[in-house]
Length: 384
Image (tube, rainbow, N blue to C red; front, side, top):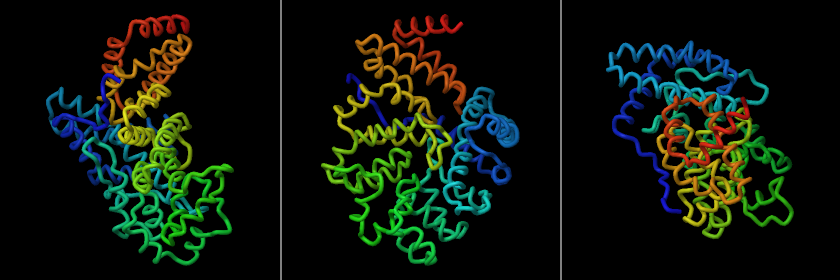
């Protein structure tokens, strides 16, 4: 690999300032009230997104117009407005569903919860810090605090939450006679009681473990966390692995995360694509150059696709330059499949992206190899 990829997002001071101002506008009290009152089925339904833009996002756009910014700066602000707003929407949808009790009336998050959101400098919700804010206050009940603590591996708080749980909830989360819960994607809330009791060895018999599989509970929960795109849990359980377990699990965990990008977006308890990309890039940062090359050679399109997600788009062109080595393989049939898959992903991104990217795609095609441009033209001609 000629060029070592960077897995740290480097933004200019101006870009960071733009995103910070946009985050501030989205978190003004009247906007949070509108978000709390908005009812949607999914952040991935186009009709819901359109209604969101018309009833909530437009209010933030109005605030930008009142700032009387220079025209060029206002355009840049508008550019980051939508993806930052959808960060709130997706966080809200995921956690409303994750924290609800079975068979209870759906509880929507309103201002007291939404105002606890914490943000990164890149303009993304910091899921772990937000969870810490929520569990330290009384805006959610003890069962929800326990579930949040488990989801984000807040081991400072989980023991105390466990003590405070009503007995019926303890029996639900710790039931050795019924391990069926461990096949679900919300597995962590059922694992932590065993961790607290130092009974992880019992989890080596988790349902679904193939006969003859010698992997430990920590290895399986590490890979499971990668599959559901829970970066906080991935980082936590990676630290619990021995050097040998890390070596044996890292590649498969990255493949799990990449595979999850191709699942339906509305799959229960699956984080959004932005979270998938964060997990993939974190795992790549842990690998040796040889391990990275293995991932790149097997899944160059999926890796490149991660850089179409917010907030990584600014790195897309440099990563694409590096990925051509593996996309342009000597097997011409495979190369054609790679090109078709890449074009399909880019078309999907154009249709559903949170971020307006015309100049990015234009520069990508200008920098792409001539045979890729020819393939694109031929494909367009065939499709009419």
